[in-house]
Image (cartoon, rainbow, N blue to C red; front, side, top):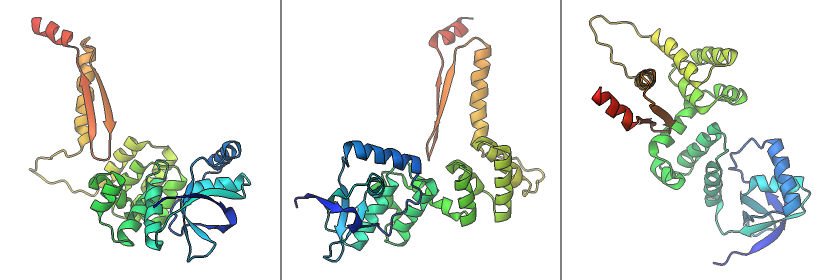
Length: 266
């Protein structure tokens, strides 16, 4: 079916009730408004007509309509799509999740809505978003944190990895203790994880005649770092770099072949 771009008065547009983005940073909105003043709305928004009335629900484009209003536009270009209430909600949530600057707790809540309110499976959501199921599970685990803890993390500008580290603590009291220490001392992620190690270790009673198995991957990461440092001390120009994804830590090590041959002939 052909989709026609129409101009709709801004006062006839209603927000999507499943718009999960709660933060619209004012400086970015003003920048977008200035761009719209200069160039207009370059990409039409999506909406659906409400019960054959002259009012329309925004399906995608909440930021653009807000910025258009700031730019004093009386009408904005829209493509009207035929979809019901549920399809509109799912589409709006997916559109928000796919935006890279969505706050990570908002993203977790959006994924939770798709699963809990609309009956999508984790596999279906992962496929729609192009994410692995393990990455999706990690996002959903963030919702285990109490609401006030999530609010504090967001207010203090802590990262998703800070939040994940707190999930290792059993009680909300311990979480607040950790959060106070993290913010007072301005701990980065690795320092936070090490600090939480000390909190969890206190709750593990030592057992005699038991070989301790080191499951913390940071021990192996430190081993690689130490090996690289040792080679550099021996005038071997070895290099390494580390990247992290939701599922893996990827280490790449480069050792010059000339150094290996020199050592073989020594």
